Image 1 (tube, one colour):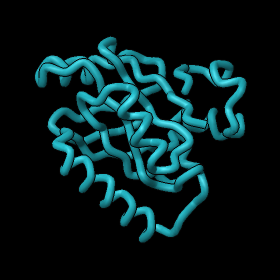
Image 2 (cartoon, rainbow, N blue to C red):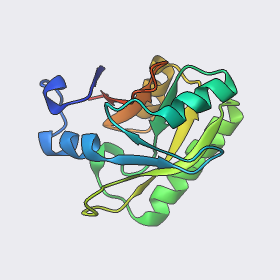
Image 3 (cartoon, rainbow, N blue to C red):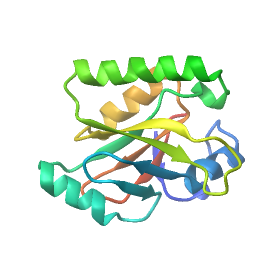
Image 4 (cartoon, rainbow, N blue to C red):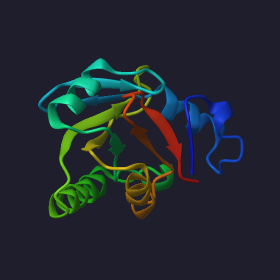
Length: 150
């Protein structure tokens, strides 16, 4: 598992460079109690304030959509995402709805969850369990980083 903010941070990834570049360019938008947009490598004041409001020091962006980057029909993606939400609820993890969106609009947004207070290892385990190539994680500095899982 590697964290980074540029494609050069992941030279040994099994994921194609173009896919990594797309993850890095994605805007991760959330519309929970405190709406925010996360950009890889940019500290986020709204996320920092959310941490302060809830007494937290980390968060992760996790999705169940399109495992290993292979597009699935919408109904399958929605079902997988519903199972993720139910799992987060069972575990008592706070989370907020959102999506990862291509700012150029070349690909459709994917439903995501901002999972609050989750540590890096647990967030990565969720991503691996869901067959994801990557997740996004932000520590106490509120600066999101891409975490390549493959």
